Image (cartoon, rainbow, N blue to C red):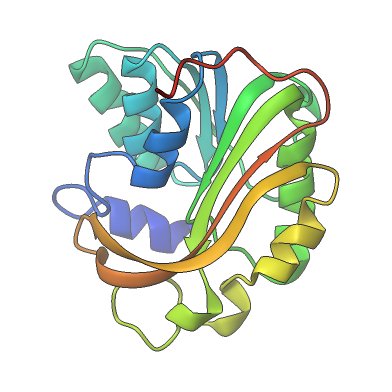
Length: 210
C-alpha cells in the first residue's frame, strides 16, 4: 500500500481506525511504568495520543503527512505532546537505536523482505529490558471481511515473527480470534497474531498487576 493510499484513507471524514488505542497495546503498556515509546506506522495517532495522556514520551512515525497532521491536531486538542516524524518503516532507524523503553507495532503490515528488516530495526531501538508489543492480522484473516490486507504475503505467521525477533526474549506469541471495534475498517471478529517480548538485560520497573 502506497503513501497515496494512506493519505487518501486518512483524509476521509472522521478516523479510519477510531480514536481509541488498540486494546492489546493499552493492556500491556498499562502494566509498565511510563517511559519512552516508539510507534512506527502510527497513522492518525490513536495509540500515540492515548499513550501521551498516560505519561509516555512518544516518538511516532509514518509515511502519511495526512495521518501525521491529524495525530498532531488530536494531541493539541487533548493537551499532550508527541513527536511525529514522516519516515518509512523500511528506514534502518539508526538514529533511534537503543533509545526506547517500549515499542508498539499495531497492524503494521509489510512485504516479507521489508518486514524482516523493519522488525529487526525496531528491536534494536529497545533499551536493555525494553518491551515490544505487537498485534497484526494473521494469515487466517485473509477470507474475513473484518480488516487487514487482502494479500496473503502481507499477513503474518507466528513462525515468521519468531524468526524476525530472534534476539528478543519472547513471552507471548499466539494466534487467536479477537473482536475488533476500531473504526470502520477494523470491525468484527478477526484472527490476529499477538506478541509480547523484551530485549535482553534489566527490565524497566513495572507497576503492580494485582
